[in-house]
Amino acid sequence: MACAFCGRPGRSREHVFPRWIDRLLETGTRQLEHARYGEQGFDMKRSGPSLDFVVNRVCAECNNGWMSEVEANAQSLLTGLIYGQWPGPLTPAQQWTLSLWAVKTCLVLDLTQRTPSLDKSTRLRFRQSRNPPGGANVWVAVCEEIGPPVTALTVNIELQSLDQPDAQPVKAFYSPIKLGHLVLLAAVLPTGLAADPSPSHTPWVRRIAPMSSPLVMPPWSSLGSGTHFETFADEFWRGWSVGSAPGVRRGT
Image (tube, rainbow, N blue to C red; front, side):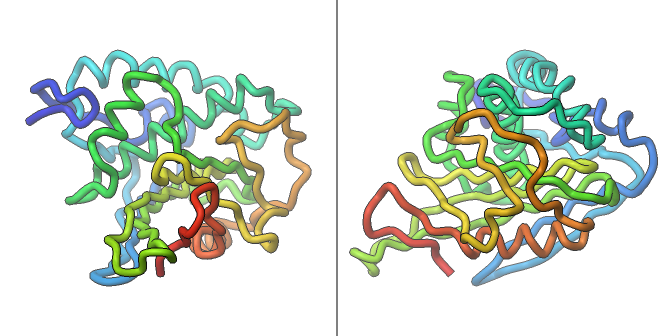
């Protein structure tokens, strides 16, 4: 089997979430939820005592090389945020580190689906550039409750052109993740597109990709619980206004 990120033959057990997060959050149930909306939709949850969620579509060289580096570079920052320990304003470098980790995790979560939503070229470009690809959108939020310790959703989205309603919809992928008190909402849209949240959702989130100026953290509104996170994550993408390319809207 060819590696999903470099195309070379070979495969290994790539953990969706690194084992150090499992050790960090010692107690409580880990939950992974796969959700798809629209035709052939489903909502499936997997729960267990550990974060042994793996994909077998990544070669050992990528797994133990650049992907491991992305994890190592983000570990210190993520550890504090997971426990709700905010370092003050997030610098552009910290935003880049956090968004790079979120996009890498989003791309791996896409591979947990039988048919990934994103094409191979998106993963190849990400591996080569080590930068969030064009069309990557990442927001950060806060959850008051640490439990459930880990929740991740995968959502396939279709973007339909208003100018060409008969054209094939363009695929996008959205993965909201809750790790303790930290919430990351990551989406990969076609290159050149950006999603703007509904004004009713902006008090809860701050965008970190595309990168913005340093953020004051928190003091925005916090999501109250894990249940609130799931409800908000679903409503959030449905309220997007997708721009930068005229005549495109979110599909239903």
